[in-house]
Image (cartoon, rainbow, N blue to C red; front, side, top):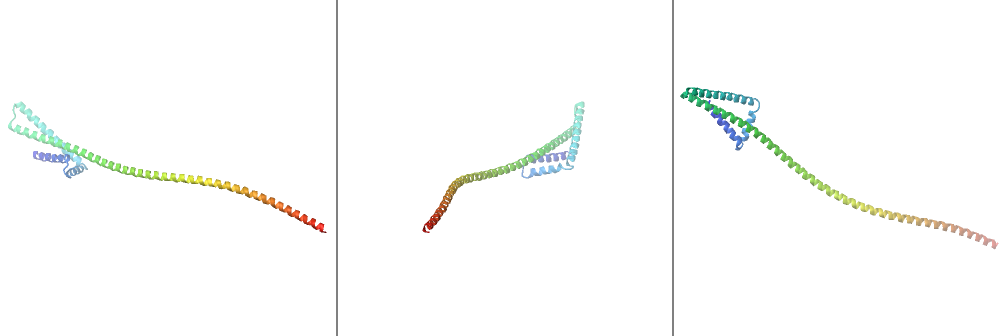
Length: 218
């Protein structure tokens, strides 16, 4: 029993050491092994073993107390009682250290698992931050490109507005010239009509004069 407890104690010490000190891939292997141990019926088995060892521990402590009480009553312990007392004390100590190391290993594994999950979350958050920074840079570049395009469009709009004002001014000038030309045409048409009337009157006067001249000749 004592040899088995020493073996278990050394095994637990090695596991605790590998969990606390990272040596190559051994920590990951130990963590994976403990993860598998905590799946399925593993926790129930471990609790059963721990309960059994705790019962043995209580039994050893009870035996130690009985031997001490017996020695106190007799005033001294016999060599056999001393051997039994030391055996039970060693056994109780080994069981106590074994249970304590088992608890330390369990808590260390739990917190290491949480730490690994936290690191994974931090790495994922870093990747998300990097991705967001890249998107921010892209948006900033797109914003700068859009700003340049807007500035170009604004310049083109101002240029077109100036051209439109110029064309509008030229159109107004042409309208004025057209109105002046139309007024001049109307004036010429009126003069032409007056001239036609005057021409008709002169033809009529000429005809009358010719008629009068023929009358005199007769």
